[in-house]
Length: 202
Image 1: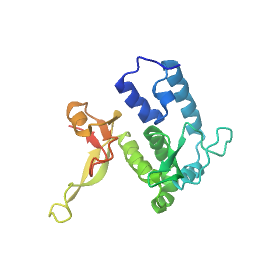
Image 2: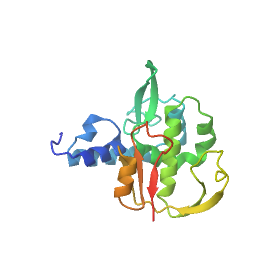
Image 3: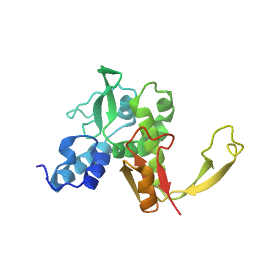
Image 4: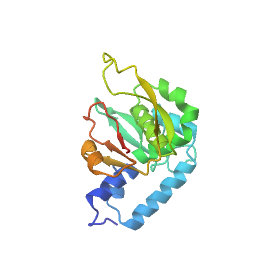
C-alpha cells in the first residue's frame, strides 16, 4: 500500500535505506518494516564473493538463488554514456555501508584494482562513513588545500568517531550548519566539488 502522507524527510531517509525504488519510498509503515527485515536477512548471507561480483559488474540478480545478490541489495543501472550497457550497483548507500564494514578487509585489494566500476567509489565512501560510526579513533589528517600550499604537507592525528546518524541532503553545507553535532552530512548532488561528506563535531 502507498501512503499519501509520506514527508520529504521520510522519502530522503528511505532513499538512503532502499535506493530509488518508488514502491519502497512511498510504502506505508508496515511495508517499510517488512522491507527492512528482508534487507537485513539478505545482508546477513551476503558473501565477499558476491560483493566483488557487484563491484566487477559480473553479478546476476536472482532472488531465488543463495549464490546471487538479492534485489534488496543490488540494482541494475545503465551507463550514462552507453544506455545499452547495464551496470550492477548497490541498491542504496545504507547497503553499501553495511557491506563495506563487513567485507572491506577481505576485498580491499580487488576493489582498488577494479576498473570502470560505478560501485568502486561508492563502497569506498561508504566504508569511511562506517568507520566514523564506530567508537572514536585517530585518523591521519591534512588541510584541504592545494599541493602548492606550504600547509599541504602538514599532517596530524585527529580523533574522530562516535557518529550518531547519517543524513543525505540536497544542501550539505546548509544542513551541516543548522543540524546536529556528531552527524555525517553528504549530498546527492554530484556537482558538489571536492567534498564527499561533512562530519560535524565540536
